[in-house]
Each structure stands twice: as structure tokens, then as C-alpha cells.
Length: 154
Image (cartoon, rainbow, N blue to C red):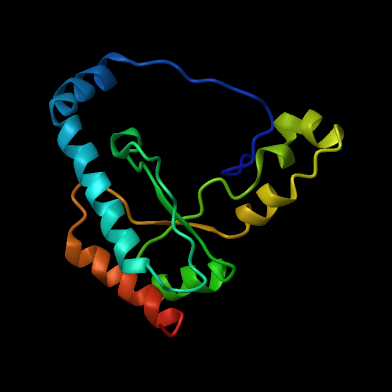
């Protein structure tokens, strides 16, 4: 049975068919705009979530243009409860890569080598992806940050 995020074999998908290439051709001229807007959204999240304990926000590289924030992933020890609360508020969130790679059947050799990777394992239980897309508005970001603040009593 196939399950999302459960990988029983290693794989690579590097194909780009004609339809995907055509869509990319239309989107490519807007890539700079999209990347800039993702960076803007990330800065707004960083500002809006500052000081809300125990939230940990991603720290981007010193070169501001190096990160495009495909995802904006926070860490919180109350991840599942926060995700449920956000859902009740009509705010979608996600848990990307909930199972660390060293615990995937496709990479069993990592587990058998004695690698426990306690930090990786702990982080996998805390990560939560917030809404992130180029068209995300400051108002939407403020709503997400406000809901997180409310959840934490901040």
C-alpha cells in the first residue's frame, strides 16, 4: 500500500514533458516577481512571529537573495495541537517530510549504521509548514500570525 511520505525505494524523477515545459515557459518571466514576493512574505512572517514562544522561525542565509522560501516551516513542540487550532480557524498548514530520511525503508542502511540522529528526529516532530505562495497578502500573513499568537496566549 502506498502512503504519502513513506518511501520504500530510492527514486529520481527528472522528466519534463511538453506540457510542463509549456507551462514553465509562461511562468518563467514571472519567476523573479514570485521569488521576491516569497521573500517578502517570509520577512513578514519573521516579524509577525517574533517573540512568540516557543515558535522557532527559519533563519535564512545572510545573502537575502539565496533563499526563495518554497516552504515557510516553523518549529513548535505543540505542533499537532497548533495545526488543529489553525485548521479550526480556516488556516491550512502542512507537515512536510514528517518521517526523517534515516527512518525511511528506502534508506534502511542509515538506520542500520547506528545513526540515531536525535536532533533530526526531534525536529521532525516539531515542523509545521505555514501558507506560503507568491500571492500571499500581508493581511493573510497577519491573520496566520495572529492565530498562532492567540494559540500561545501571546
